[in-house]
Image 1: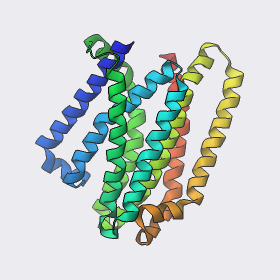
Image 2: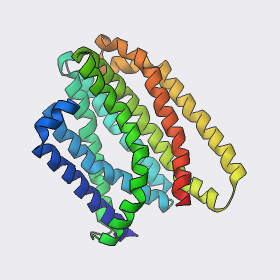
Image 3: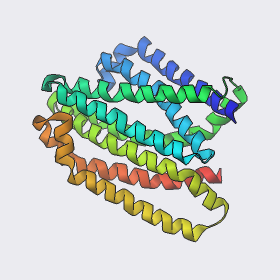
Length: 274
C-alpha cells in the first residue's frame, strides 16, 4: 500500500510539472486567456505541486482509520494559511492587499503540503507504473466532477475581466477568495465521511446512512448560511471597504459550492460501486 501511495505521489509531481512546462512554453498565449499576472503563476504551481500531497496523505490516513491525524491536518490546512493571509492583508496597504492575500494563503498552504510529502515518502520512495496506470484509470472519470468546481470559480474572473473591467474583476476575485475558505472546510468535512460512508455501504446499513447524511446536509447548509450572514465582515477583512459590493455576490456562489459539496456524496457512492 505504501508503494502505491508513493507511486501516485510521484505521478502527481509529474503531471503538475508537465502543465507547468506547458505554461512556460506557451505562456504568452495562455496569459491572454486566463488573465493571471505572471508573478502569481509560479506561486500557483508551487501550491498545486504540494496540494496533491495533502490530498494523498489525507486519503491514506482515512483509509487506515487514522482520524486523529486527518482532523489535525484538516485543521492545520484550514487555520494556518488563513491566519497568515489575514495578518498579511491587515498589515498591507490597500494597493498590495491582493498580493498579500495570494502569497499569504498559498505559500503557507504549500508548506503544509511539503510536510505531507515528507510523511508519505518516508514510508516508500518507489514508482510502479502499474500502480500509476490503475490510478489514472480510476480517477479520470471523476475528473469532470472536480473540474466543474474549479471552472465555477475560475470562469467567473475570466468572463468578468473580458466583459467588464479590472475593478469588477477585483470584486469577483475577493468573493471567490471568501468562497474558497468555505470550499476548503467543506472538502475537509466531506473527506472525513468518505471511509465511513463506504464502510456503511459495505455493511448495508442503509437506514443509518440515510439518517446521518440528512444530518450532514443540514449541517453543511447551516455553515453556508453562517458564511453568508458574516459575509460583510469576511469581505472587509480580505479586501477592505472598497470591495463592499462583493457581499452581493456571496449568496449565489456559496449556494453553488454548497450544492457541489452535497453532490459529492453521490460521487463517493459511485466510487464505492467501482
